[in-house]
Amino acid sequence: MLLKLEEVTKRFGGLIAVNSVSLEIDEGEKVGIVGPNGSGKTTLYNLISGVYIPDGGRIFFEDREITNLPPHERTKLGIARTFQVPRPFGSASVRENVAIGAMFGRANASVDEALEMADRYLEMVGIYDLREKEAKLLTPLEKKLMELARALAMKPKLLLLDELLAGMNPQDINRILDLINKVKEEENIATIAMVEHLMHAITKFAERVVVMHQGAKLIEGPTMEVLNHPKVIEVYLGEKLK
Ligand SMILES: Nc1ncnc2c1ncn2[C@@H]1O[C@H](COP(=O)(O)OP(=O)(O)OP(=O)(O)O)[C@@H](O)[C@H]1O
Ligand SMILES: [Mg+2]
Image (tube, rainbow, N blue to C red; front, side):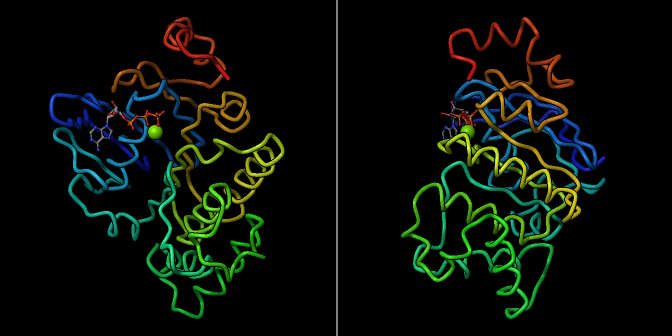
């Protein structure tokens, strides 16, 4: 077991954003996390990565309890994520932004190593030419690719992608999906979890899907089985399945 959540709850005032969610993710899995807007997906990531401490429940990573561990310690253990809304260090260069991942992630690289790793991962995601630019000058799409490079440079065991593909054109989506599938094997990343609204991206990537609804886990299981389940179709009826 790589990651285990036991009845994890997070409240914001009167609102229960994540409601007693239990979840297990095994090493090697590719998991899709879907659910309507506001169903708690990003909050779940924030709980796993340590941005928030849960109001109830416990979280384990490789059998070690991490419920109250600060984010940078979880990063060292091998949990990396991208943000739905990227937050670069704006005045630093793209290369430096990615190198920071290599230095403070599980890779624990020296400055020189980190800069070399940054170049390698920028090349991999396809924005090597932008490496000297100030990060704040990137387009939203380029910022997402930079975040992916930074997360990869951390050498994670668990990579959490939060709507990485949103706003990309179909060509870029296919390129990034192929890339993610490839780096998972080559970089020995145990597990990738992906939050996406794009169902064809989920079906292309995920072996297993977890559906969130109003802060709770509605259903989980093999991708096609779950996405065709009447409960899931009902939840999405108000929204369009894309
Ligand atoms: N920091 C916060 N303060 C107050 N409420 C919050 C906060 N973060 C999230 N929420 C609320 O918690 C609920 C779950 O939000 P969350 O962002 O986890 O949903 P989501 O599934 O990621 O949605 P989306 O698909 O739109 O990204 C929403 O009602 C949201 O408004
Ligand atoms: Mg979200």
